[in-house]
Length: 274
Image 1: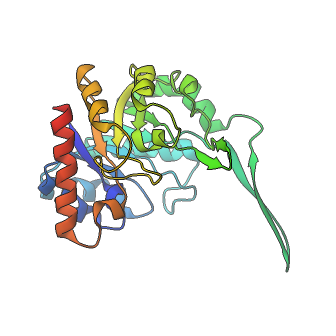
Image 2: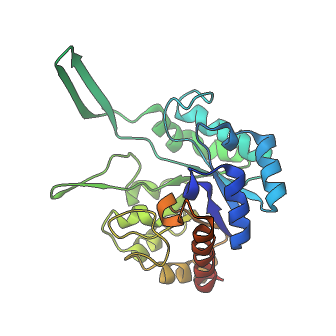
């Protein structure tokens, strides 16, 4: 199944993105849950899917702390997203791994303001929940929670990993993964080799290219996404391939351009996967 993430046009309304995705030929929709009620009201989302004739196949749990009206820590936000997925008929929830650092800010008004990233001394409650409690919760919930690999950032000659559970050796210990291709592009590793190392855990894919900037169109970047989709096909991948762009790559602001680019992205996926 080839789906579109609403995050590709997060500055559009959910109903508008659903109509554009259906017209471009996508099989389904992944909802990026954020602070807008249009992304987390089950009755509204079900009506959007019905009106556009496109099913909601997955949800992306909110990843910003303090999401208004959603509340709670990462575990609470994730379990609430699972409840929402069950209500709209989605089968997969995408979750970010926990951050490895927190932001420390010291202020001495009026002139001194010192801010820095400070490493956490031990694994967070959310990290412990993902490694110890998630397998049992999977069985109870009946929804697949697929943890996503996250980008890395270059600081001079060094590569900085801001997330816990974001190394291949750690990801292999999780039950289900979302493989994000553009995030892997920031790791400076071989996409196909990394997929082969994680293939028995990958149940969901976020597909976009990378050329120094993330979330480019599938055919616009240095990642070998055609061979990657062919590798998925050879392994009889049974999950969902979700095209996840950013609004600029999607052509936001000109719906004719959006339609043309989304259609090309869907065709690219089918040419190499189907």
